[in-house]
Length: 328
Image (cartoon, rainbow, N blue to C red; front, side, top):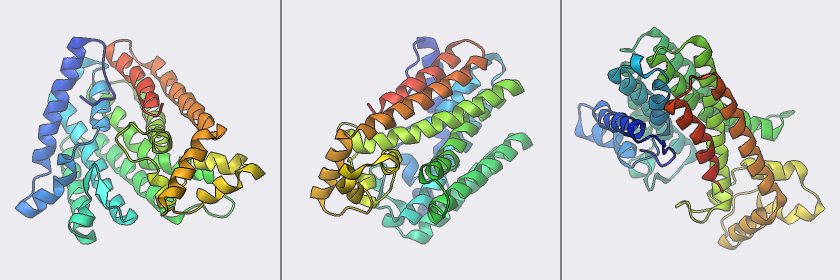
């Protein structure tokens, strides 16, 4: 099971683990192609691992009404969400000119941009063929979610436009690129078990908010953590302005001139990376960013009050704490 979820109920944990193991096997077979090369390329990032956060949310939400949840539908729903996510990573890496993803060479660096784009398209097609077996309501939600993913990427690529607030623009991009698919994952799980409309709406709101929290906690990890297994300062090296930097820009005083300079451009000098990290870690804005992440996690938790009590709701609530604790 993903390290983000540790249900207190051993029987419930075993059930969730069983479903996630089944999903893992199904991901591999669904990503298989007619040629060995395409299969290798399509399974490249899947085999590199990942948190499987979206399949986890599908499984957890499906257990809100466990007697109504069909195992095959749960597995297919989880596969659709994860393949859609992984497909988007292939495309993201091309646009970002990334060299590494999940600790292995990105598809575009191992092969080339054309292969990476086409493999991403192949995985989207596999997700689409799987969701087509589930019903039109599932097809519609996946299509609407895919449209949001694309719109978020377009907004990120264009950047902040005149008159736009940079922080609001960033949060909108995060909601579209990350929150939308995580929201769809929780809703898919609820649909699988026949949840009523008010519960599906609550799951959508929870998923969107926890998805944003998930990304914002990554923003903090990139600055604050030396123990996460990730190299800190990646965003600074790439000149990407994330939550703490955007909050700094909104509140900076004359004493922040040097830190503003360091966070306004890509950093190629490791001494400057270290200086920027030290400056941000010591600045009050980092605690302000942490407080915002905690606040949003509590907003997400609030939506769960509409869900039926039980181990599934408790596990979804625990995720609010665990996503926040990643960045502490």
